[in-house]
Amino acid sequence: MKRNAGILLVFLSALLLGACSLLDTANQTLDYANQATGHLTRLSDFAQEAPQQIKEAATNPDAKKELENRLNSMKQDIERFNGLEAPAAAKELHQQLVAKNEVLLGQINDVVDNGHLALDKLQNSQIIQTIQDAAGLIDRIQNLGL
Image (cartoon, rainbow, N blue to C red; front, side, top):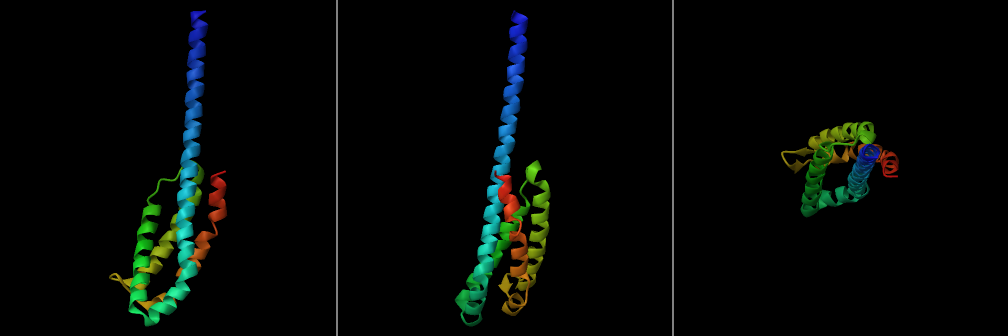
């Protein structure tokens, strides 16, 4: 009888540990999905607001400085996101986002030289298109959180 109780206890412990591991994996995936969605939302917000900000920056030095600061902040956000450890369920998707982010970082570096925005380069850049391409992954990311 004690032996059966011991076996049952071991079995229940293993079952409980497995359930905890599954729950932990689900939480990590949901957390990643939330972080990736937030990242893409910030990028998309920039893409929507940038055309107007670029127009204002052409005639207003304060608006240009604000746009410059926003691009520098976006670089930091991209670098932080790229450094995330994606859960197994999101590895491939994360690699795709990192690849798009790397292209975007290169484009930002092309228009921000030594911390100063070259407005003409920004106007002729593909930054907005690159952001839109990356934002196309948002449905797949949100499906991770189901």
